[in-house]
Image 1: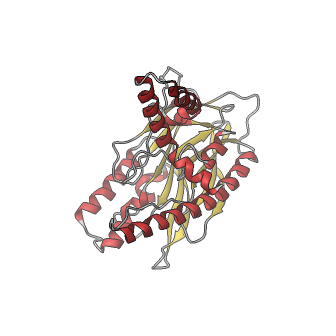
Image 2: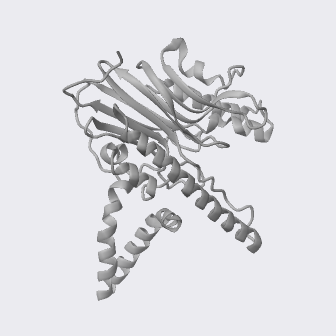
Length: 342
């Protein structure tokens, strides 16, 4: 299973190399082109998860709502700790502009991963800032600061303009910031279940140098991190999968999945839910904003029997986190009966 997980990261590379091979052998007018042609036809099954083509229509406004999902990288507070520059003007600027963007975003429901909130900080008192005058109901699943051992509101969070009448934790991965939570949100006479997850991180970094010994250690470290990440991420995904299957309400699942669309986790959820990028997005939808920028690891899944995805946007104009925010807009489909809070 581990090796299949590794290969899933390379599928886009294999497809690209195969297209080059097909073009070469077609140019040579060789029968060998048949093999890459067949492989190209087979690779088309991955096309919807790689590149989306959807046209916007006039869907009306009834029962329409939007969901933002954003890994905010702790609003860059870790850079203050690491650099010991809590008053650094440049870092403060990125943190402030990010929280301003989050506050000004008009989504009805906002889901955050790597969320950070410090009530005594002028910069990082995030919850009160993005939800002034209690305009959002909120559920924050917190964690301890690893050094100060001070309980902070950090981890994952759900903010909703609609009432939250039930909430809870699906899993917590001890020793990390990875966890999954849910909130049952009442929209009119309907209740929907919002699930926000941050699955185990890949934590890939550039090698410190490129001499043979350092590069060998780098490759070995990457292998161990990928192996550990794949196994732990699959276990977490299985817990969320079972939770989705047992949900009494319509489900929207979003978050940082830390895996490409070709891996086990994505395919497992895609078997029971539709992906908003595939159904309402356009382009590649790359969501990672770091040294490996060509990956889409942030997702929103939804039950197509209950919802219709009418829009999906990746906000690449918000560059201050290691992830770009993603936002889906949905219509609630009519039902013969409605489940709502009593």
